[in-house]
Image (cartoon, rainbow, N blue to C red; front, side):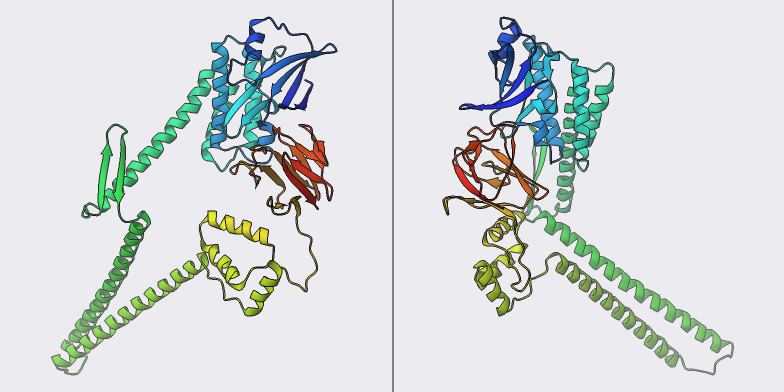
Length: 481
């Protein structure tokens, strides 16, 4: 099947060529061109020099093939794809369209990232068994599943087994999809209830600190408490440790008392049978009491030593998870001030922020990247990563191309480099690093990507050269290699 990508003033288009002239007066063609079906891409049909083209509007949408080229497919992604397939099949059945003309190849299935909705291409002259096409789709999905995501693996392989059956039906997919979802919801709900009941049991004697609320309409059990869950668990752990330590101390005292009593019996027996000279009872009792005292003191010292060892181990563990930064010398602070422009107090503040939350650490890492890296002045000069620098100084943040793949756009959750301008698409372009070169590709953006004034085509991959002028719509950059 011949295909290509085109761009005009209105957006980006996927163009598929038909071998024969389609019957534009037919019901299916009128439904397709009229865009009545929500899950099918809007399209128009054109005829030029005896060739008939079906143009699908793919502006601001990404194909499955490009979307999962680098990343793995998780449970939510798989739900979106399977749910989209079920939805489009039900819509086609409702509007009496032939499902065999649906393209189920990943390069012809498009996703709106923001809406998380899947769109399909419907080609009038295309005809292939939908069961076989869906089986090929599942075979494409299995290798790119995130195998650390147990739910994704169970759902993916469950659907694949269903697709191999001779009696394959859409209801089987719905059963696997929604049954898996319901089981997960039931598991989460039951685990929440068990955890809540467990903490309710721990706090039965603390009614002033906790209150259990049961909502019959929603069937949920909640717990409102003043103390944090982790604090309660830590307190329970500490109590168990203290009970264990006191128990071991008591066992040691009992053992020493038993040994003293046994020795006393041996001494009395030896004296009775004449093996020892006559010794007064006071002396024997004194020896026994002294022996017991020495034994109990030894037990107490051993338990105290064990407590100290446990405390030392705990301190080491805490130090491993949150090691304080050593105090920087004046020389180090002066070096950092020269190379990054950060004062000593600011560098100390950046170091202290290493123990903050992940989001704050991410922001600090971005700050440090923007400020520069500390290098040893006496070392050899090492070239840094390639960058995109704003052509209007101070207007746009510098983009550092450190990763193998950098996605550029204004959607923070999907783009690696965020350019917050109205004319920039949510996912605008990508730059791939390969064998020391940087390749730029437009991602069906609405306003396009250009290099040195030349607009890139939808499937074009351009190798960037030093000092190239790159424009993401109105975001103007210079590429520095």
